Length: 295
Image 1 (cartoon, one colour):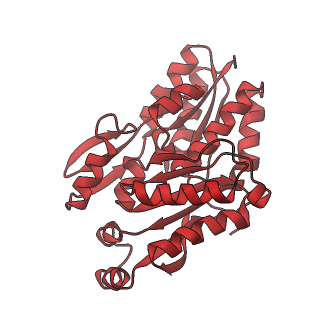
Image 2 (cartoon, rainbow, N blue to C red):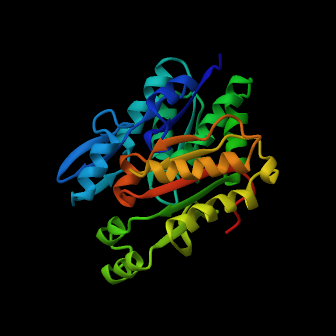
Image 3 (tube, rainbow, N blue to C red):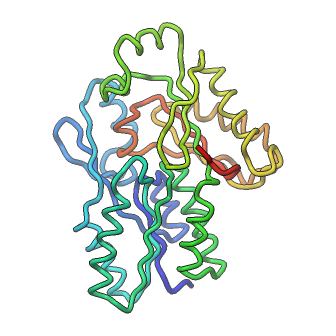
């Protein structure tokens, strides 16, 4: 058993059971819906179906990151157990949580100078961040030290490819990211934006694709073009989705057809409260190891 703790946060969008199975504790973000604050706790307090149904009905949403005080308490609990820590955060390109965790680590190191605390920016999100944690847990179990693991994640995090598409633009309108006019014409012409994460962990629009069927084919083609060893890819593949399981399953079927050497079936998870509060329903995201993100 490792003599340190590998940890993450709930925005990695794995299931509670998955986190427990790989032995990775997590700290929860928060989201607000219609003025009420909820923990983003992997659907334990508010199931994903309920959250997205309320959003589709027009509920207002906002989010808040884990603050320094919460991180101080979280890290201190592990130090009290005599454990070093490798904590992997949600991408700094979409959240300030890396800064909060790093500042908290400075405070905790002063209290527990004998402990090592490594805070690593995943430059990832949702189940892509989750796949980084899953892979890191395997390396931990193979005997990698805390310092070695933190260095490995930093060296390899940009190889975790993130591709997203959305078929429902209503949350983008509410969040001010697109105009009502653009959303109207997007709906008329069945436009589905295709996005990915760049080398700074920011979500970047790449193409506007007409029809759901075409964007499903295109997102899988991006995996063909970028996955390690192409269609001989033998790693894991995760999908996260927000209230559009049929679309996610269509992507999964095509991935499994194109990549016969996958490590197990494609795993489909829910987009949690933190990220889902911004994307709304209708988003599918595909994650795999492959070529390094360079832009």
